[in-house]
Image (cartoon, rainbow, N blue to C red; front, top):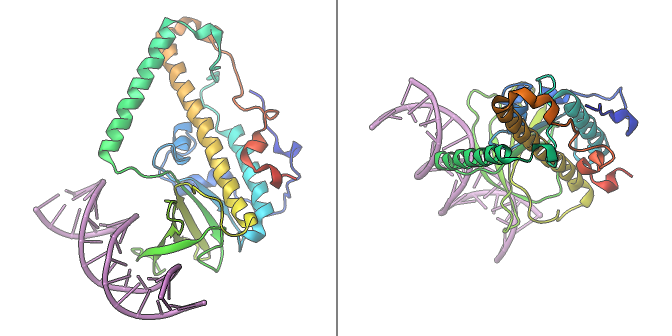
Length: 275
DNA sequence: CGATTTTGACCAGCGC
DNA sequence: GCGCTGGTCAAAATCG
């Protein structure tokens, strides 16, 4: 497996405050370090995805800094959250060697299983959009993000020294995005912002302020795809390992799903930000 | 006067 | 079933 190094791409300022990407697991009810947990974390299921932006006061002033963080953190994830099993390679989707009846059968079974799980889930729970949250050190509760929001509710937070949690909805009638704001339990200077859903329109305010959120969402979507693919391939690998354990090693090829040359950076960060 | 915020009531999900 | 909690609704109040 090739190692990805962001130093080759960006001159990251080592002295600037930086909390590792892995720290976001501290805020989530998923298993730390597992690729499954990470998938759920990215909104593939119903969990939250958290970034941490310490020492930052306004969205507009941190644009460049955050962009570098996102890229650095993304590279860290790629290098540290690979499948834990040794030799648990990625299986090339286009590999001719694994195209046979057994393969098709297993794929079909996996799809059926996934559909069954989906049906059960939607029956169990009301459908909720993937959530995406980040923390910002700020004295101001409501940070400018380029979109216009209307407050539709406020709730007292139990056992919290801070009065409430605020609920906002995008003012665009065709857009269903929601946002939740609250002060951190552990550090009052930190504002936790949670977005739910995806804007169906462009930012009505400045392009520059919305670009940060756009980049973050873009990064989240990227990893969502990445780990969804990885998880699916891992399942297939496990299924085939149990059924055809004798020739596993010779059957699958190791492969990096998104190579740097194919534009990992471009996939995460909007191109005009890289200039 | 329209847009936005405030706030108490209400609803749904969950654990016991 | 009951109580708790997170999330939403909607009428009234406030703002620009």
